[in-house]
Length: 120
Image (cartoon, rainbow, N blue to C red):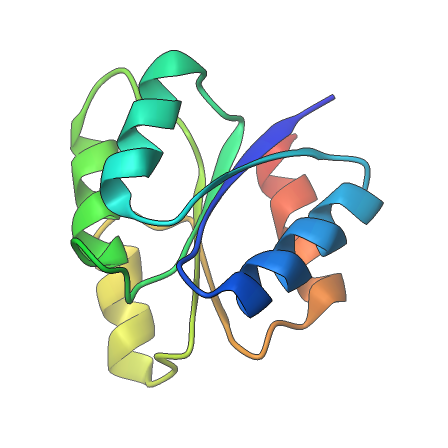
C-alpha cells in the first residue's frame, strides 16, 4: 500500500484530504508545518507528498524546492494543494518542482486520480 504525506495546517482541510486519500486505499501520514514534514520524511519516505502553500513556518513553495533539490527526496512526487489559484501561482508551483497543482476547495475525485497517477 502506498503512503502519502499530507502537509496542511488547517484541521478542516487536513480531515478532507486525509479521508479522501484513505477512502482511496492509501496510507496517510500528516504534518502541520515544514519542520514536522521534514522530520517525518527523514524517518519514513512517503510515496507522494500533498503540500499546502501557506504554512506557519515556511511556504510550501520553499519546501517543494528544497525537497526537489535534495537527491534523497527529489524523486518523491509533490502535489501542491492550495487556495492560491492564479495562473502565476500554478506556474510558480511547477517552477519549484511540483508534479501537480490542485486548487482548494479540493475536488476529491481529481485529487485521488492525480495522486494515483503520480504514484504508479
